[in-house]
Image 1 (cartoon, rainbow, N blue to C red):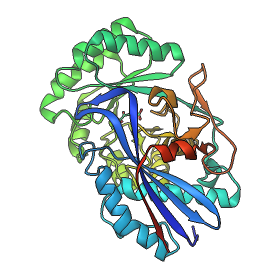
Image 2: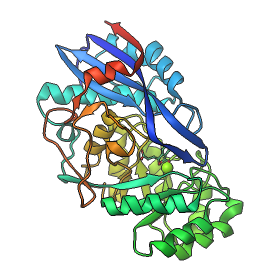
Image 3: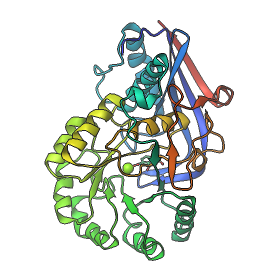
Length: 365
Ligand code: OSB
Ligand code: MG
């Protein structure tokens, strides 16, 4: 991408979630999201930084991303003509927000949809699943699953942690014997829990996501050898190199690709290609994104290897009002239709974006 940028605008927006979202590492009720706008020749490209509000899923959080962008990535992008930020160690989500914005800008300059710009287009509809957080009671969880199954979603992911796992999955399975079901532990277990985790095998889950440490591959390989349930890696895969190592060690049978976690479309594609080559299915993970990040995830999900339903779901599950128009919608078959407008395919709701912006910094060349 050889675009000379005129200006980059960083915005932090606040968006209250319709319902709190709880994982093994904590509960979120309001998102603080950094939105990146890259400007050249009167056009804007849009990106979203997908990190959380605290350094609990990975090392990044809203404020670290702001500083990495403001002090390192943005000045470099304005000085040069490339979206490469590989001189920065780590901080993939901050860098990924800028990288994705550059792809959107490039697509708009070429007058093509983002999915075409990234080399996707293998499908016109994205199969969708939902991720349901830990609830205050199993009854509330069952009610939520019922709602999502009725809405048409193709698979249900529930979050698990020690004390909210085998017994909960057992009750979900009793009530919903037919659904495509999976569980995400967000690194809440160790290899010492292998026998306990093996009890999940009887519930024929599609996969168990990231049971062990966020930075581990080898223990996952040992655990996978003991489980019938396929392991899917999320936190552990930050690069194509990691993906290749995990595949070689048989640490997982499935990979969740998150655009932010791996630093943007270029690396996401490399991971995708490595997985396809090895016969490993991938799916697109989510980070409670606003419509901007959601639109990027839809484009990514049109690459051929994204054969499993992702955590890409309708705006209304998260927001009373989204920052894009129209909001992202899911049809009764549990799919999102891919749009053909240049770039993201969704329009930015500038008035609403402005109204929820709590800080803004415009940096010019
Ligand atoms: O591990 O997939 C995860 C949300 C925040 C942090 C980590 C994860 C998640 C989700 C949400 O599962 C997926 C979504 O955006 O719907
Ligand atoms: Mg996960």
